[in-house]
Length: 575
Image (cartoon, rainbow, N blue to C red; front, top):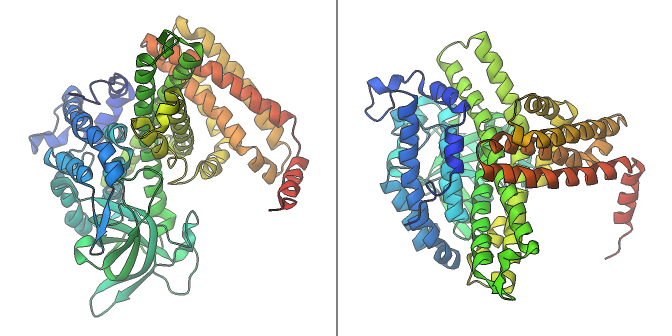
């Protein structure tokens, strides 16, 4: 029997990370729930034991149910029957198994039937589910919508919807995109109007590319202010599927993540409730929801990388050519070593970012209960800034690495990997969406570049640089210091041009240079714990140094005139 939690020692490292003590204490508010709830922990170790037990149950379901169902789900996919989604058989089995185990609402408060686990545990659950079936992780991971309701909705709305997620396994959806509003969400035109006779908001219009679009509970971005055409006219609403006022026009026929129904929806006088304040739908609530979703894609990408790496390693050990297993050839074990280092780097970045998000979000919640002490408020601001900087970097690196690991795994399989007989063919297709949805890699760079120019990344790199490391990795520490110096020189050379277009031109190169250093430090931090991490740190930093040199050389040899050359090159192209 497979268990995706117990067979991955990385999870224990992150569950026992030094910052977890603070996270658990903040989450549990001095373990106050223990007096009224028989499953609430009484101390830190009790909490960690609970996390391990529940995550082990989830890991078993991922290994024994979700992963074995992945192939049949990929072939069968969901269907539309009488204007509504019917999941593939395996998808429904996955959902039922998790629901029966009481695992939905893993991070929601206990007063709604949730387990009140930290975000770290929810992210681990996302990673494990994604390793089993990336498409199903989209359905499981959309519990982020329930977290958004918990953060911003009225008590009445929370009491109506959150127990359904925790106790009934109600699924969720975020209905944002429209045919003419993709990444540009301020162009959303689905209309919301207040009906005095019915004393409710009614939604009318079309949404497209909606993941799990026929979910039980949907958060809908809609235009509530007549005569507006920008973000200030948009509000957030919650819609209950039981009203049956939304029809699924079709399910998109996608390249990958086939089990996840991506729907086009038609709203016809669909009754809905306002979440939070009018006009704040995109400005406040969607931004929070999207940041959570990007953390989820980081987990999804890491889980897929884990699956793809294991498939490549297994095949390389079993496939013999020229009288020996192909893993014995340098060309193959180099690929595997680089895949493993990128996997470890993605996971290190995933949980570092999650810890930052966890602390600042928990302080925000505490601030609604009582006034924060000055030290607490400063900590909240500090971790909020780091979370804002690390979230786009996580999404960028984890999704790009996910694609490269899947690509290399298929390459190791050779022609066999191109056939549907092997899981890697599905993983390769599933990987491609990760650096597209919830904000493309290009948009992540747009979000991240200001943290290059304002020095957020450099400040955190210097903080990592000032930490003490064991003697075995001192040479890596010195290498990272040299990479930091090179990065500083490059950023200064670009910024001194005082040309925003030129900064945008080199934005990805600079963000990636910063990322290679940050991820390198995270691996070095883990390297003293176990030889496996040290080897990954060695491989990753060696490759990262070469990648940074390449970017630095390009930047130093460039000039703002290059932009005009590129423009002319494109405009002169004939088709």
